[in-house]
Length: 235
View 1 (tube, rainbow, N blue to C red):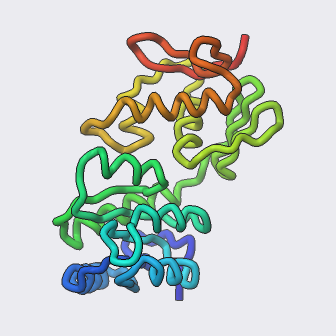
View 2 (cartoon, rainbow, N blue to C red):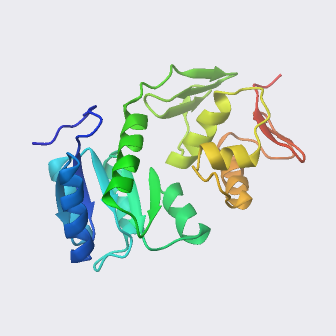
């Protein structure tokens, strides 16, 4: 039986979506030996069915699936579920990693890896998912509620992508502080060893548009040239 909301350190219901039978068999066995309950699927659409039907605690997702690219499956999952997803794939580099993390993946692991390494990632992601969210933040007429993952401006809900919300929440929690792009990449994108600053610029541009402002005429998001960006309420 699924154990939604499980908080045990070494026990979770894991759905493994992986088409390589050798990898799937070895990982399933290794994760079971470490205490997890594991179900698996070799295809994207069957994996989506199991995710909706069984409501696992976490999904381990390969990108190279035979019927549908794993990135597209991730977007379909995010439309119906907030289940934590670890992408485990042979694809590396920012060109592959950044779009997947932007689409809502909670972690990204590059093959080869062991069941023990994946178990450590699983426990870390579930710890983050289990932490109680802080109270809503208010910056001027902007309200950011991390529990509901809801942002409102002047009482009207903002239509934000998951990554846009994460960026806005991170900045709102540090209102008035200048935050560097490197810090955003490290803390929001979980890319401590480098990443594309352009990704941050694009998301800030999208946020400005939704906040009804521009870089040249800011209301909330202020660029500090050569340093970073800060979020403050209108004076």
